[in-house]
Length: 603
Ligand code: G6P
Picture 1 (cartoon, rainbow, N blue to C red):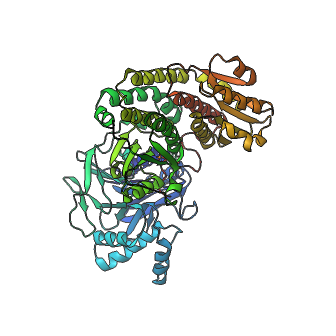
Picture 2 (cartoon, protein in one colour):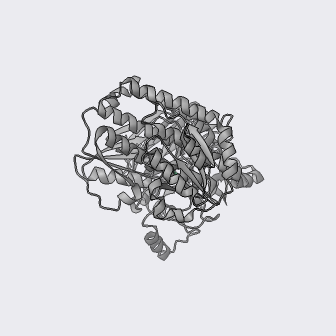
Picture 3 (cartoon, helix red, strand yellow):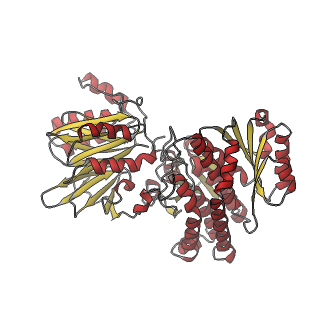
């Protein structure tokens, strides 16, 4: 979703701000803007569309300013246009905002009645106007920020610059904010994502909710101070070295981040297994033995929800723990029946998904223990949960999640084995090793999958089917395809096909049938039902089954031997590559698909 980058220091702020914003493009956005100080005045340049449009504007004058704030906006309040793009500013202040001000319309009416004029339809401008109004009465920017922040409701992060000084300010509630400092270069950076600061700020700080950060540059030093809303100094922030590798910022020799991330999977699986089984993670996973909760409430969104559906099978099969897996935006408003001895388990790549966070809050309020399966250490979810199971996927830039899904499923499996006291058995490590080798072989075989994509990419629609553990994979395969190739795709439990969706089958409809050794004959009957209605069948299944070959138009054969529990991940990688190649043939923006955001920080 929206991205923020602010800079104050000795160099031209345009370069680090635009570089930072370009790194945040992966989060999804529809307009971009920057505020600079030119000739002592705050000047805003902003443009609907991609960051290149803003680059074009900047290229006309090549402005230089030692302080600036930039933003990529993903529209919530107000249409996508230049006026609604951030920053919002006036003579005295400029602000960039992520999140939603829930009482914006009431406040706006009150402010308009007082004679304040608004230039946009955004909720964000309400904060600018409040700040400007309070600065007149309070006589200090810090006090005005505190008052304005206390007046608004909802989850938000702001970065503010002012005409009066070259200082930058930030404040946030349940939205990500990171402050970076480069003491050698005398520079301060504020951003919504530490990824924007890699290579710029070696030291980063995460302020907690309702803490105001202020960045100041003097002749001799750069400093960041933190204040409570009553303006007393705050210690509610966490400092650390920025751990993200600079490699994460580039695609290497791959055409897209998504492809790079698919190819990273074999190494990541082995790394996670080594960490959890033989390394520092051992105590966490072994410590689960004998501590099974009576019930897991698993909630997540999108791909992470699909991972939850796979994980449920592990907990129920190996640990006999009852589970409910639910879409976070449903769970939170359903008044679920929650009991204190149960555990809320939240799965999220970013750890910032608003609906998932709300579910964690709900479970916490009801007295349940809360666990996360999360990629981003230090994210809001990570900080709020009682226990965290890091998936160690590294930065995921492609909006369509690939390696995070794999690592989430694997983490769930390791948890399940931990509860069962089987983590150290040779079989667990061995199976992950076999999986890693098989996935590496699939990645090497991209040409075969590309050839299949060529036969399929112009078809009208796709129905992915699977039974048992392959049903969540069918859902995930369909989601991936619609996300990046913009074609209609649905995932169905294969046995459910005849209860409605089979009416869609004709010779322009593709059935991507997922079959494993389990329930093979049943799944094969479902394929035959589709064939009888002239559907085009691409089957992914165990090798050596002549009847599957006979009934299918295309088959991708896989070796399921040695993978009694984790074959779902292998099958899913075939689907990741298939979606990728179909999208490539369709010429879509694979890493930044239209209308989508990587991290959905609003509900
Ligand atoms: C967005 C992304 C999906 C992702 C979902 C959940 O919708 O486009 O790829 O699965 O959010 O994100 P999370 O960060 O919570 O895993």
